[in-house]
Length: 443
Ligand code: AMP
Image 1 (cartoon, rainbow, N blue to C red):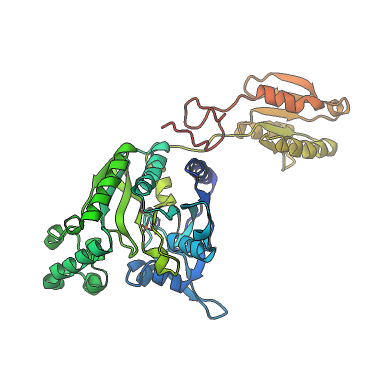
Image 2: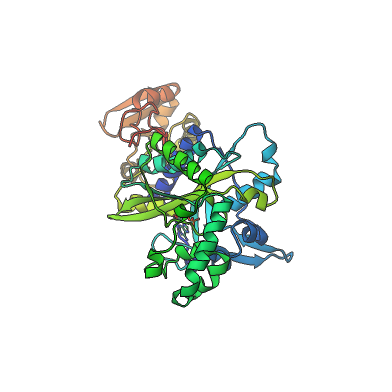
């Protein structure tokens, strides 16, 4: 048997329904924020990630899937979404568009060669938002509020945001040097990776999972103490807007984020899952990245979350989404003429917006009734040649068990009249008539 590669996952059945539901909910929410959808290639030239994510990051040094294609080009499977979106922004000259800032969201697979464990895979899905072209603090705060609201809409509890600021380039450089000076006398205490990264990426040392219990970590200098006045003011403003948006946040001076491109605001979102905090995603401001990748200097802010984590969190918290049985009509038949009519009718009804199933296995009528029950079909249509010759069909309400003969011309009208509008999956009354992922704001 050929099995799936290590660190990958098959998503099917109920889980597949839940994924679609959450993706639809995201699409609807992003429309409210007037974000457009962007789809960039799953593979890009290797150089994009070296420059865009940073040569000195673990992501680029240890985790990317790199290969040469048959034309001898260096190719990398994307490990994250921002670099590709920014490349596309520059290549397609989106900075010249009249509609600014540019707001895009994506939702797709990413690849990292990591040690697989629960919620950590080698192929995984991230959704993310990028707002390019505004330096206003309101865009930082709004960027934080989108995933915050999204997780709450899904019914997750204990959604918290940890925020910090790295300050502008001057503050960040200042802090960088202070960190190098602080850790240098203790270099022997650090893990091998941190010894190597100290000069190149000292902020990353603070993020180290191996060294985080060391005493020197606890007393390390904090970004907040090395901010210049304008960076401090900016941070205060972001917090003010977060309060207006009623986002509960925790200031976390040790938060730095592993990627190279962040400045000013950095943040991470967590949800309480099985009584513990689960990291759902993170983001921040990246004012230098567009220029670094060859575009005009353009401020930007973004966020990325792991879809696999969101799904895991929902599962562990027993929050079911998108599993409503939705078959409206099951078409039953016995002979070839009836089957032909069923084939025609199924398409007609589907094009009229109904969810239709029909018999595919040539089972007996008795087995077809059982199948309709298994599918929890709301109505059954028993196609019978004699009735069809009279332009009629027998239709049975599978709940009340009432049966009636109706004219073929009347079927769509009958179903429209008799199928109740589904309550919205948010479990509350709202105006969306139960459309999946209506984006309504019920918690
Ligand atoms: P990052 O791009 O590293 O900031 O990651 C943002 C989010 O993506 C994380 O909080 C996770 O939810 C998710 N994520 C990152 N790496 C993986 C992975 N290997 N498997 C599943 N989810 C991941």
